[in-house]
Amino acid sequence: MQTIARQTSQATLHHFQSRFAEQKCLDLLQSCETHSTLTQIHSQILKLGLQNNPLVLTKFTSTSSNLNAIDYACSFLFASDTDKTLYDTFLFNTVIRAYAHTNDLKYKAVTLYKTMLDYELLPNKFTYPFVLKACAGVGELYLGQSVHGSVLKYGFDDDLHVSNTMVHMYCGCRGGIEFARKMFDEMHKLDSVSWSAMIGGYARSSRSTEAIDLFREMQIAHVSPDEITMVSVLSACSDLGALEIGKWVESFIEKEKIPRSVELCNALIDMFAKCGDVDKAVKLFRNMSVRTIYSWTSVIVGLAMHGRGLEALSLFEEMIDARVIPDNVVFIGVLSACSHSGLVEKGREYFDSMRKKFGIVPNIVHYGCMVDMFCRAGLIKEALKFVNEMPIEPNPIILRTIVISCRAHGELKLGESITKLLIGVEPMHGSNYVLLSSIYAKMLHWEKKTKIREVMDMKKMKKIPGTTMLELDNRIYEFIAGDKSHDESEKIYKMLDDMGKEMKKAGYIPTTTEVLLDINEEDKEDALNRHSEKLAIAFALLKTPPGTAIRIVKNLRVCEDCHTATKFISKIYDREIIVRDRNRFHHFKNGLCSCKDFW
Image (cartoon, rainbow, N blue to C red; front, side):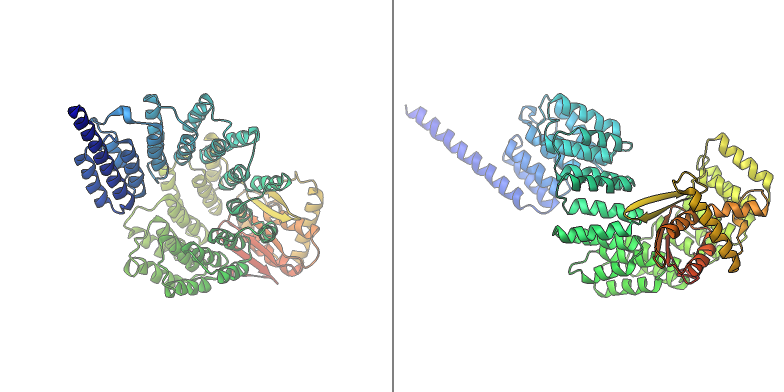
């Protein structure tokens, strides 16, 4: 009897000792803040014999995740001597979640999910959101589809949270946007997260018109959006240059009393800057009580795009005075400001200060900004010298920048040799052939140009057509060079003819050297007249009251002839015309452009 009592007492004591040791480790893990402390706790766990304690293992994993040391935790969890019978769904969920939240190890979350199934552990409704987010991060469609199959197999397809994450996953995978929409349309129940995921997917995929259309459907369905939805909608407005829709969205945010988080304020600033109202962007920035580096960067980049380089640089200096530490992204804005405003010496100073003053090592984008700055200023030899002295190899974008400058400034032989080099490096990149073709056209080497076009046809390469978007009455119209598919194309082309006559009266001479075809001068003028921005402006003149500003967005750099023509149109018709091309904004008014013909 005494023996039994003693054994019971010892068992109770051992139990309390084990619980005490367990609680001690849990408390240590709770307060752990460094990797070195984590390794010390690891030693304690082994010393106390708690390496097979499920609670301790899970907490150890969670703490490791918070310290970005999940690989370290896994080396412990999945060691060869670990008791595999102690693995459970909760532990795997913790590890999968940790890997899903990493930047470059998301694929391991999917691998561990497969390992979990190999151990015959059943996933639950908390497993899939983590796995699906990891699939979105990896971006491989087949991976997401295989996990989708598992969701169906284990019957979690009716869980709203899982379904929402599946929409997000498909939006994040290459080629998955149509699968996302199919998933969205087939869901039995939708909440604000469902709508937000699909709208965000469209916005990130540059399918901005569909993003805005879906947001309108969301309003009809009486689903209240949150700030995340509004950030995506504003991003779509930014992409389209849809200022009127963007203004309506701002009013909607006010009316619905959606909290103006820093992220939402940043999105509003970005939208106004990219839609042509940079002064409103600056005003919003000034009214912010809390600013992030992204807030400063958005305004600096916005001012740079509008050719207000000195203001951009002044704001950067204000940022430094406010003790905001610059990053490599804000320097892209600073160097772009110098480039678009011809501030070459300032550009050199800021580029040198990156490393010397702020300890930032310039990357290929910064070098590209410098080359762009030299080329815009016509300093081609300076650009070549800079490229030859770069510590890293120039990428094709930098070389194409030099070629475009060579073409613009008559250095055609040099442009030809660099383009041939580019074709050798990127034999399937269509723009290289287009550049070489345009150089031959400028050299009047029509036979060589024809041969290049034949090679492009043989390789099934197409030149990107010039397109221009115009926002009118909350609708986006798109015009393509030479297109006659518009319902009112007859009126548009008649307006074009009238514009041409008025411009010629005012002294406009078409820049026919822009036409890269071996045709007569009259046909060249006709080809220029069909450029997409001219079609858009003609339509705007037909559809808007006199004196109304016209805002258009072009997918390519505005050509020299259209730039000259738009200056004439702005004066003849007394219109302010704001053009956003691939590189910057042009504000045309009274026959002048804000870029001062430097673009």
